[in-house]
Length: 328
Image (cartoon, rainbow, N blue to C red; front, side, top):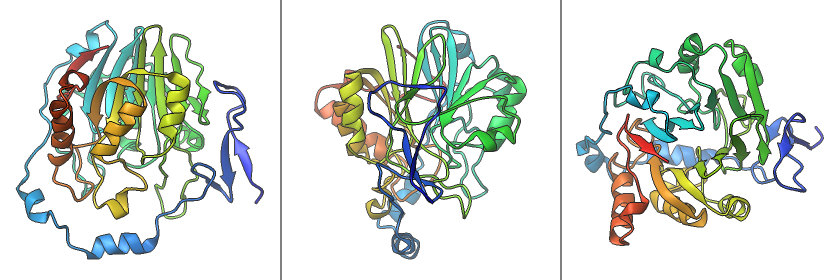
């Protein structure tokens, strides 16, 4: 099959000389190069003992939850963490959910904390942002429930998700390539690069794209990193945007490094990326909700807290409780 660059012809690129995302042999290619986890690494992880097994078993950490619906009614620009990579935003009176997952992923991956409110309370949502198709970010059951209360919601996603979403009744879908800006009248939302991959079933490796997002309106700018490894894309994003008011950065699911390094940043790398992005406030995510990897659940948040404290920049990090509102 011939290589091609794919994009949404109805959307514009914000950068010059961008051709779209490389698509070859039925798969999207990360940074113009095929990257696939060697089976030997997965086998090593499955057959090896976790050196932190005892420490992890004793670690009962889970995020604190504030039960409320106040954040849904506040009219200021704000961000509320809902656990994992799920957030509620209000920007310029426009409401957004990111990667909503309000259920157990499978019987083996259980959600560790409650929601701050009921799913039915999330009504009149304008946009849902989906960073990629992994089941801890795109949950069909959650989307179906949200659609029942938000039948006209528009889903903004990377290329390749239209069929999946139409099959569950989503009517309004905008797909984008990296560096394309969605058609959102009240604010600017752009799909940006990430170093990751996709698979939901055995035979669909990288048939859909992945990415991060910039959300902007006048004096407010938010970066949502999605899932990503560390790469040059952070520098490329900074070269265009220069700075962000808030960076929502994943910090969990990073051990063992030989397994996770190619797809997930570590807490230390998340801090480095935040600095490269010239962020003003670091909000950690992607930790504490599911047990996805080898590190003890409290380890990532301790690492980032200690870093900001030890460098006397504690005002540059905001560790949110689930259901806690942060004004931007």
